[in-house]
Structure formats: C-alpha cells, structure tokens
Length: 433
Image (cartoon, rainbow, N blue to C red; front, side):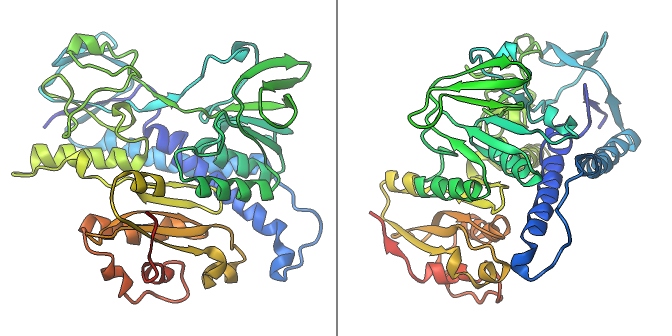
C-alpha cells in the first residue's frame, strides 16, 4: 500500500518530544539528585554541597529525545511506499485531505493528531507569563519558586523533580485532594510523599486569579486554609489536556466530535465517517502512549487480520504516576469496586512490610489488590511504592487472562522483590462491603 504520513511539527508526537521521553529523563536526573542528597543515609560520604547544572540536565534530556525522534524520522523517510509530508492536513472530503495546496485521496484515513495543554480561562491568565508541559522542555535554568496550577500527573511529576533540583515549589489544586480520581487514601499517601520533600500543597483552591507584581507572578487563591496569595518566579499550568481537532475541517469529512472536541468513535475506533478512524489522545479513549499504541493494534488487527474482532471495550484500564515513589494502577479503584454492586474482597500491605523497600530505604506507600468475591477475578489494584510501576504488570496480565486470583496466590515469586508480596496480599483478603 502507498502511505502518506503528515506531520506538521516534530515526528514522535507528545511522547517523544514533550511527554514520556523527556520527562522521564528529567525524573531520572531528579532521582539521582535525591539519592546524592540522601547519601549519608546509605553510609556514603560526599564532600561539599550537591550542585545541579540545569544546562547539563537539559542537554542529557535533549540527547535522549533527539535519538528517539531522529530514529523514527529516518525510519519513515527511508521506508518503501511511505511519503512523509512536513505540513498541516485539513479534510476536503471524507476521502481527501489538503496538504499545502496539494490534495491527496485515500480510501482509508487515520487521524492521530494527539493533544496539547489546556489553558483555562482563569482571571489574569493573559497578563502573566506561563509554562506548559511543552514549554517546560525549553527550561535550562532553575526557577526560584515554581508555582504549579494542577495537582494531578503532570503537576506532581514536575513539582517533585524541580523540588529535588532545588526550586521552591507550590502546587495549587482546586479539588479537596490531589489526583482526585484515585482513592482517598492513595491521594493522601501521594500528598505525604511530596510534602515530605518540601513541596507546598494548597488544596480547595476554588477561585484562582493571576497577576504580575514586579518580577513575581502572584496567584491569588480562595482556599479553606493558608495564605490568600502565593508569589513565585515562574508559573506552570498543568490542569489537563485538549485534543488537536479544532483545525482539521472535520465537518467536511462528516467526522463528529463531542462537546469537548474529542472525535466520536465506535468500539473499533471508526469515526462517524466511513473509512476514517481516530487513534490516540484525540478520541478520548485514553491519554497515554500505551493506549494510543493499543489503538493502532486494534485498528490494524480488524483491517488486516482475517477474522479479528478486537475491541476497545476489552481493554483493562492501566497507567502509572511517575513520581518517586511511583503509583501503578490497573482496573477499578476501591470506590469504583464498592459502587459496582459486587462482593468485594481486598488485600493490603504497607511498604514498610516489604523487605525490598526496607532494604532500599524507600518505605512510603502501600499496595492494595481488589477481588470479586464470587468470580474470584481480580477487579483492580493500586500499588504505590518503589518498583510498583513494574510490579503492577503481574496483576494486569492476570486480569487479561481472566484467571482467578488463586493462580497468583499460589505462585512462587522471586525474593527479594516487590512483586513477591503480591501472592501474600492475595492470601489475606478481607471483605470491604
């Protein structure tokens, strides 16, 4: 097949350029800084203060990003039957797109335009300079005081890393707790992790307004506790994402969007227009690289594998929060399981009782696994602690297998690891009503 790939900016999209790859490179540098700062706890003697060279931190990140982006670009440019267009595409009809004055026709069109940072219409937003997750990638200096509006994944990851680099950090969240869609005890444990490192967290900020005062950015907050103003040197907006669907002329193709701008798709990711599919962040079915890649697998299987009937609805919810210590999440939360009407069993273990965590000196957090008391299938898990972003996959695989929890309960896991305690947790389940 002849394929046209249209990219208006950088090959690799959010993940490679402004998301997973660069931020996890920064998280790694921040982790190294934190370990150096704690060296004495491990019996190490390091002379002098620990310094941070942000230009070198950024250069390391940039090199990792460039290697990934250049590899992808080269693969596309050198692949047989693929033409890479460096332009912006707009629909002219259900089977045609306009690209810089050229019109391309195709029987199959795949929309995978991703998303961008949401800039909310809060008072004063147009009067102050601000950063987003994308423009943060250009920062090669250490902000004196970074104010972050938004207490979910992006805000927490940047907040902790820049605190470890040496910035004063304040996170302002409108909700009564961080990462509001997680269980309350998970939110509380995450708050404790970042606050112990000196991040200031302001919750219940029902009204936020911004003003420039000299060299400072001032966030005025209407909170139930704390000072009414937070003055800082830099501002990061981390309040959510929006799909890049507003400049594609989708109406000319008969592709419908919902009220938030996400492209409406069915269980096989086909849009309201025949022959057009929407994948990745722009379809509202997930906001992660792994969900975008799984979208591709579903569409490709249904189009190319004879007899395949893969569906989005078969997917198990799975994601991670890459603060240190990380949260690995699959399936239902405890609140969701309780509200499902099932007979729910739960097993928990604090990380203080995980030998691997104790040995590493990283004992904050806990692990919880939920089970359907009748079918014995696993409903979900929240694993917050060292190595939990990897350990959670053992639970996820069992959920995809639809196997009873007893399969893992009777398994022999390797010692000493975090995963070795998963069978132990499943051996001590209790009813949670």
